[in-house]
Image (cartoon, rainbow, N blue to C red; front, side, top):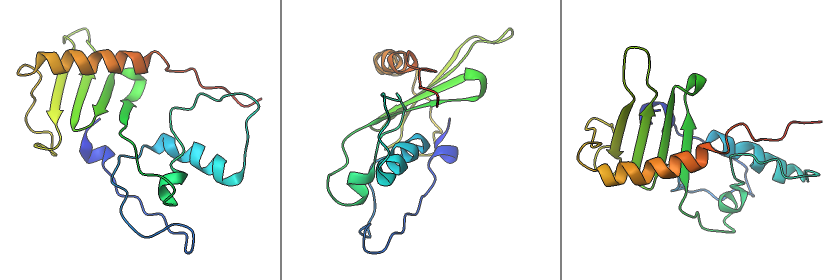
Length: 146
């Protein structure tokens, strides 16, 4: 859920195809399957509803990265995270012994997620929580291979 586990460098090397440089937008592991399928020329018979997006146009210099959100689910859906720009909300589910816990970070000012701002910015928590719930509504809707 935290940047220490999700902010991991990735190297792409394809001489003559991928232009050297730095990709400034977040990439999620779910982006690789749609990207590889596009590169392989795979055309599904129906929309597969994958969570990721094809980042090939950005890797090949055909388009600039567009702003994006990143939605992450922890094991057994006990924690959810939603990143929108420099803001990140983490929601830890309630347990038998603990109430739901919310964490809010401004990654531009606090990349190590040391200062929980959830109580200082309740309106930002509400905004990101609404976006997180909208994204979570699509959980488990991917198509299976037939």
